[in-house]
Image 1 (cartoon, rainbow over the protein chains, first blue to last red):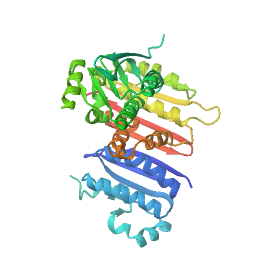
Image 2: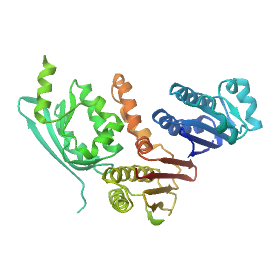
Image 3: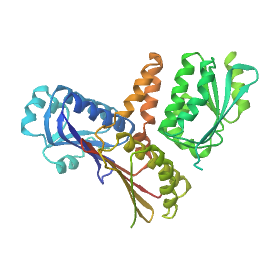
Length: 119
Length: 122
Length: 143
């Protein structure tokens, strides 16, 4: 129903941002998320980590938006990672197979430390 | 007195369907309505080529950019054009960041704009 | 660090004055002409977005600048629950125009959006948005 979005820049080189999502990534939340994030990543020049540790709910529309982030970033030669997926949404993501496509980590530290794909 | 936007519109000799429009000051969220109002009557009366003199345009934001993009869309739809000349140095970076210069052509002078019409006719 | 704070009713009429004010102050902190102009643009775009979102009830839009030598930190907070919907109106209007123009123009419209321009002109851009409003925080350093 509602989603809070926080985009923060990390002190990393090359440029890296974290988008933390709180609430629900459903039809409305997903639209909001897409409206804000997609133009920024399409026109920006940074790697992105999505912190899902406060995401309570995700459905297929939400997953669609995450996949769009992933494909835009990949086209730009940038990385997209998921962090802190909660137990309750883990199953949905695994059933859809997203976790096989987008790298996932337990903590932000691990996600930042993995330099694979970062030029 | 707040510095806002002044618009001056002139005919273009030899081109009945074109107008020369000088924009002076700041084209921002507050002042786009001034530009739209000024140009609207000419557009309604069938003008299809808008030539903007930007030499004294000191400031432009996303609302201003959108205003130009809309003019472009409307004129293109009629088979016309939008052209800029003498882009003020101050706003050049913003226009380039937005990428407007890739779609709306700009020239060094009014004479060069008129020449471009001749070239296009060939 | 020197601090400049403003609280305003969400009214676009404030913006030209605010952006000029902050830009002029920035001159005194090591920014050159071009950077001051960029700051003016950034302040304009961020303030316009905040006013667009609006505020709830009696709340005001909060603007805060923290100046230190060769750096400005600029924070704008609104309490509106409208999100970034205002830009939908632009898109909707464009959709009324001929479809085949949409391709080249929609990229332009996207690139021209306030926050996209801002992102290119600053060193750090943080956005926090939700039902309680939006806070935008930027940091720009003089080269």
